[in-house]
Image (cartoon, rainbow, N blue to C red):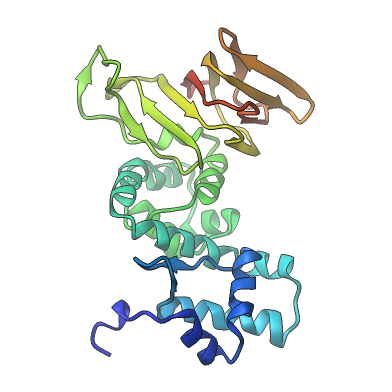
Length: 276
């Protein structure tokens, strides 16, 4: 069919194709088995790839009567790839993410002497999807980004493509934006020297936002809180409530997570060194 990839359907049409009611499809979305795109009028729209995934969800949930937790695990690759495909539709975001991701993934895999299959199996994605990531042809969700970075023992920021400029001074309104996919978190790179070993970032974190999943990697990190507060948790049992004026240092190999627990935006300087 000519231009079939551009053909989209409404939720009523898809429900008819699947022989279910529209409410069933909405329920699958509420259970995080599927994420629907939205058209200009904010109505849900579906293409042939979406319908194929929905047929698979119907088979698992209705025909085989599996519970939603099991289905989410079985479809982890499909769900991650769908998130990435949706993000790829946002042209500016996708372009920024490709700049962020395209250079170092393959280099790290080869240095680790790993195959595409070994890495993809370890992080729960398909080899073909990993290949697209390594070649800069796919955007990825924060969840997959974090799993890949942790597999290689690196901070996510290690994979940010360095700026081509060489500047010792960065103005107050300058600094390259870095989008790592965390909701409510905006980051600007404060170093514009390509071969710099340090990563220095300005973070702006909205209330109740942050990275709430434990992660660890090589390196050392230093934070200085300018405004607001950050609740930092190390190794599941050490909590540090950091307020304006506080500084914090830790070894990145310690499991860590963080969130803005306050009611106003937190702003901080975050410095990371990839060396143990």
